[in-house]
Length: 65
Image (cartoon, rainbow, N blue to C red; front, top):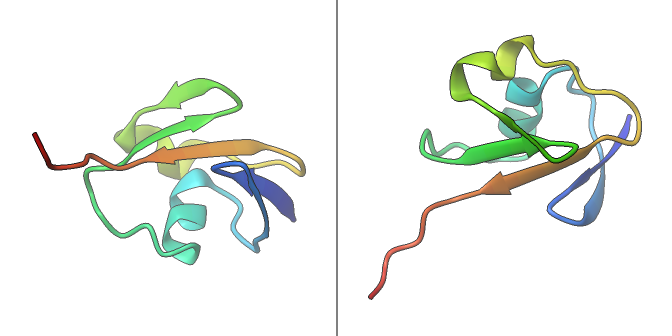
């Protein structure tokens, strides 16, 4: 299935947000996710289905100052 992740097209076999994160190598537990502009809580990622053409945003915290 084709989805957009952080403004880049990806072909994934994942069916949920959680599976897509794993498949795409987002292994940090501290990332934030949004699907089609709506926040997806960590505990809902496994229950949130992906569909063709979805837009997934993955944000990781950054250190600095």
